[in-house]
Image 1 (cartoon, rainbow, N blue to C red):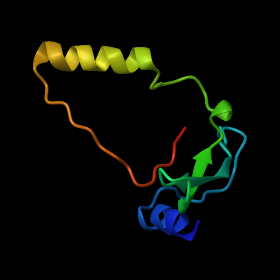
Image 2: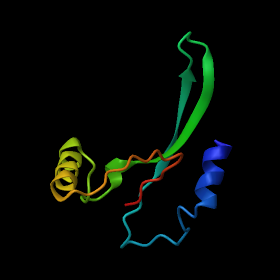
Image 3: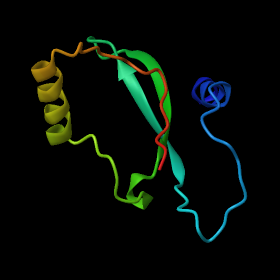
Image 4: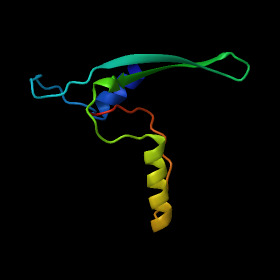
Length: 93
């Protein structure tokens, strides 16, 4: 948890502002997971701070159909495609 939280703070992921009626507030929660080696011994403990997405308003979605459309466009226009693994990420509404 400290590594994840410190990375979010270091990256300036959010800015604390007073809540108003006009804002769509999105909560968050901690999700914990234990990563295992192939022999089932414990590799590491992971913690992620995730947004409660069911509070988000309709907007951009990364559903498989959307991803396929973007890949099709990239191939059609000859755009380069890169893969990026993000160590920590926080969803914004």
